[in-house]
Image 1 (cartoon, rainbow, N blue to C red):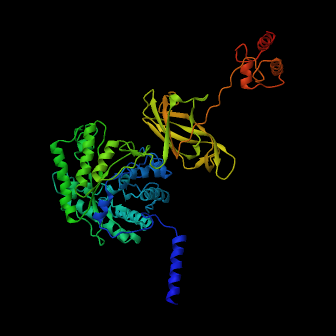
Image 2 (image 1 turned 90 degrees about the horizontal axis):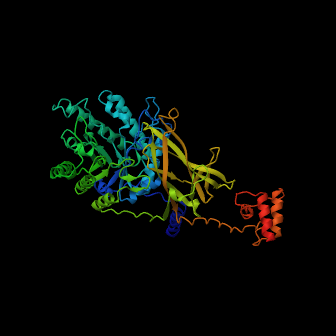
Image 3 (image 1 turned 90 degrees about the vertical axis):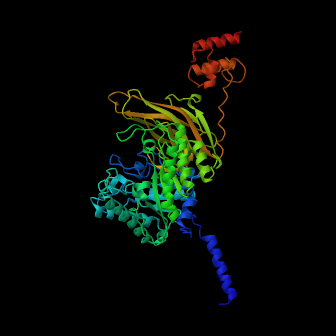
Length: 604
């Protein structure tokens, strides 16, 4: 083959690939493993936040048949792509996703992760990667089975290896924007060594077991194929304690790829960062920020730097945070920003611990405290995306402004762009008059008409919601799917200009025996649209009332008398406006007195 023909052939092939082979997302299944060190990757993460109390929610009390049952069990709304994008828009560079992989797992000793649960975790990870966030995924507390290692090491190691083998297989082709973390805080066992006892008896055994588990993690990942031979890994420190992880007995695992970072958590002092109320082991403190406390923070961060960072081992502060209950607001701000700055300035990545109702508002999809958001981003030099810059608009209605139907439902104007409604956020207050230990209820946003994409007949539909005591916000999302009265789901769009917000049911420990002691008050509703909200439909003008003008021709004549007589004997039916004109005695109905009055009007 001549050089000219070969060049033409290759050119044609390249053009074919460019036109017909779709490009893959840069940070997901494309699987790019860049030639960068783990320290460079950790620095590129900037600052992070946890998707806490969500996919790691677990407990035997949860009646779990779907991933959603667990995902929402500890107070989180169902996670949406918009929520995940909101983390990126708030200036974060990495999302840590704690997971309880045992949820929905069959109790048969095989430790096979539920496909449904794996798929849901993958969906959330994919959303984060699509948002160009780094992702850290781990095995979290997961009902505490890791705590049983000292008593049942072989079985626990089998479980640990089997679970990580499956996780590795699922994500082996993912890019280096996905990082695996060996475990959470459980690598360290008081049954082997109690650090508070003053004795070193059993200390080496506990550290050696933690080191062995971390080494098993690295070995499983590196032998799992795909991109996992080069994946950046996060090694859990001893109980993720800074002082214990810096102990000489803690060893980083041997890694042929030399791509491991170490993870510790920062909740110190625990009397401020953990306790909301006094406990038998400590007295809760409401303030933080003395010279000594700041010095203690810097001392621990320096310890991590000299032990690890200065020796080429990157550090991620996988969790840091504090509660707000019974805490001074300025101290909370000072603590969070000081920990973030102390870590970041020492080349470490701080990842804020956050749960539903915490620092990030999962309903509004933005940080709850704009000032905290600003200060954290200033530390890392990251930017915050302004709300509405994605082309969405919103409109808020106070319930006091809205009309109600005969059953008490609120009539919600949707405007002319109703089909592009993206979500609705309802502000409410739920109380119990008898102080029930538990109380809840539910309602819905109903639509007179939604139009199926397949061209079939429009039908009535609704989006239901549940609430419980203390709930202040509700989120309703619209994904282009609506169910009819029989539960059949269709791809459809809203085909009406108003909806009805209704409170449907209540329940509590006092109900039904003690009566319905639950009250739900809707305060406002905010509607979010893709594009413009659209104009509200104009209400039809009330026709002018002309007493006696029954035929509505603008004048009172004998013809009106004839029309009224025909209506009285049932030959014709009057419209609402005609009835108003004919009701001359003002009693709201047509009778013989109206005929007499109309006759007298004509005679005069």
